[in-house]
Length: 107
Length: 226
Image (tube, rainbow over all chains, first blue to last red; front, side, top):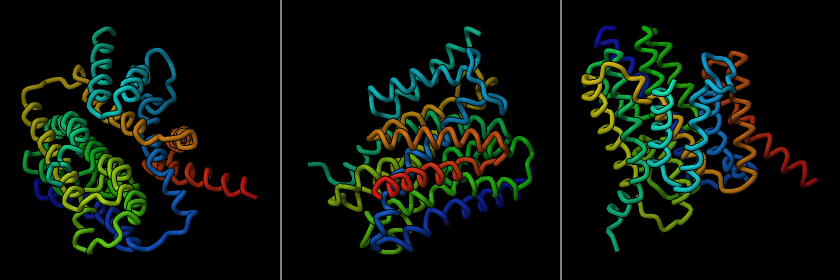
């Protein structure tokens, strides 16, 4: 792809990423939201993270793969464990990657 | 007592430690996709969205057209709208340029951190910005390391770079779940996301699953109150 087209694509990506980040803050900041909305927003972080995570570890090549060959699924177990124990980002990321590295060496 | 900017940098350390390996993965993949260093770093500066950048790099290397790449980015990042709305009550009284600056660095990770720290309303603006700027510098640094590393690494599979992002989601998810209800909403949204993906919602599955999962729980609460 031409460097100029790549540049335009990245600029486009930046615009469509920035506007949804900005609009609600500008529109809602300082306003008191209805309790119903507040309690709804309260569930968003956990829901969105799970929604991003699960397809990546349960599916393999677009199909459900809850089986022994799905390394990503098995590596999630120690990663969850490390996250629960350490409550930080770095240790679970390293644990997860190490398990996948070792798993790939064994297969 | 630490000055507030330094305090913000310290608070961002967990994000820094998560971003460097994921940014590295992004940098390597961007390099393998044939993107120049300038374009790769530019993306980390002006887009600054981990999963979308990783997905975009995959689309670039698959030779996807620019419109599809931009549309996919839009859909993948639409969840930030929810983050922005969720933090808006805590940022009452901020001036518009300050909100504009804050919004530019609103990611899954900075949101997860702010949503816990901003409940304490004495959090200073300089501290909040220090968190964001530190996080983004780590992201750019990780990307740069990846570009340099990508030139040295022939094969990426053995390094499990493709697991950096799922592992980070796991860590963030664990930090976000503070009670059973949030845990159930997470499970519901996760399962829905898989189902929506399988029936062909192509990149919309994440936002649909989030909206349905959170709404279901709120409806349930309303229904139980009656």
